Length: 94
Image 1 (cartoon, rainbow, N blue to C red):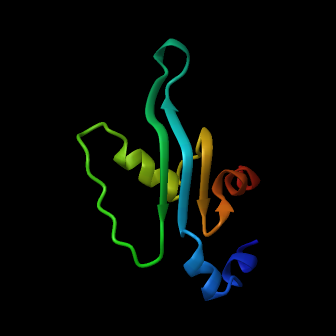
Image 2: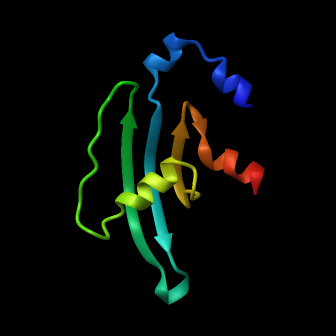
């Protein structure tokens, strides 16, 4: 699968977002202690863009970055890196 990602030509990379998140939600805890830290995140990041992520402490900045980096799995919604659904990739390795 990694080879297929690397084989994408540069024209297709320019036309699609490098990172795409749609209706992304994330929670910590379970049951009565479950707390939603990301709610309905929608974004598209394209090659060459410079993005600044700001917000108060506890607003979910690091959680979003760990999701986009593949260090944590998305609980609901869609998260694609180079057009590949990251949730599906993570499930293959777990």
